[in-house]
Image (tube, rainbow over all chains, first blue to last red; front, top):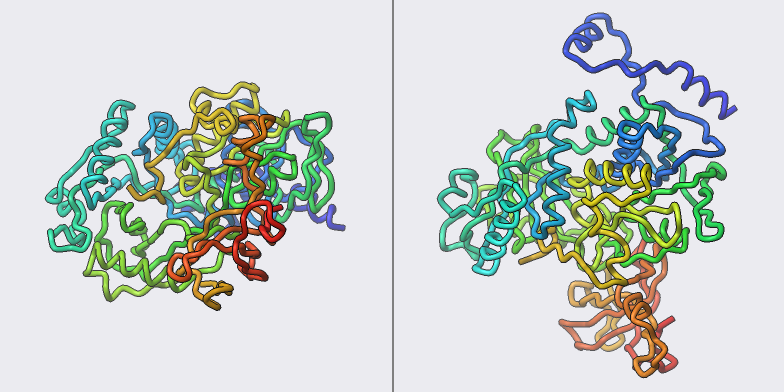
Length: 430
Length: 95
């Protein structure tokens, strides 16, 4: 019965209509329904590749497998719903102003892909390239900003250290006086950075992958990874077994648990990170503001809400509940930066799970289990990396060779002792 | 906020404590058979379970002692909090 229903939905489906102003006008006038953009399917007995996690990383990997390499017999499995984990809980900031050359190159590729994503996928992802300010409140932080600016420029990424006058011009709401508890001495200004509507990115990749023939299975939990003779042979799911020569772990929050199913231990500890959003007000903040010292980042959405993020909670947990301590500390730090926001009310707060690695860099690539690939350890920087990670993971799965762009981020760097210390990550105070 | 029942100070807000990490069996430093790979696995790899785990906490703004805490990482419930004992003693709590 369940199967019949799935088939009926699938057979009713037509190729997704291209979104356009003309299409909007026509459907607006005729009242015609938009066709479903994502189909439902019965779980097949086997696929060429199974991707665990239908977030931005899993969906991007599926999309680029189909678009760049012609591999479409792919299933994306998720125990919850599409984009319901970190991909829908982040603060939607994208940037490439990291500290290590490996990190800068990688995130810059992601920013390039984000730049053309709306056109490439025919989906408005609302990329607002509004610039990104990382504030320095002491000499040490200012030195790190200079360091990051020089590394960025060497990699062809637009970043520069600016002084309080320029900061005041870019963001007049900030208190740049010398009397603040944490005076703003300067900032790393990164014009290509900005915000993207994260749900739209998930939907765009899902729609494109689905149109190419990839099957997206929501409410399908992976309960086991089958390994025979050091090789992946498939997965056991809550809807039955699936055979596949390739399994890609694209989960965030559950990365350790899914990898443990394949017998792969990871250097990851999972921490919640809380965020909050205020009531909408008239647009006044035209850049993204980050303070490593105060552990906050702030941006204003196109709807006018202020989105606040913080550093990870002080102890690891899989709980996604909010805490009053967080709101209290956040409010204090925000008012430290911008006292004029005192009357603004917080609408809601939430938490997402961050898989923290010892060096604040992700883990991408092969594992000791043949056919079991990792795209995990995305800590506080997973959303902005989605497109580049998906592109690189698709290349790895299709060709079997690790792309140069992600070679430094392999799992073997831990036993080999070549960590990529990324002090440009959001949760790191400088 | 979670309450940690410190054996020396009584129940206290977790803000007073510092989480020091999952407890793991350290390879024998004197053994010549421990390989660098085993040391690095000890240094980096974590079980990171979604469920009961045994970890070390430090009561920074209290008794300033290290404690063994059994905590559920999904519900943050704590079922045991005891003084940390030297590695190898029966109560040290390491797996």
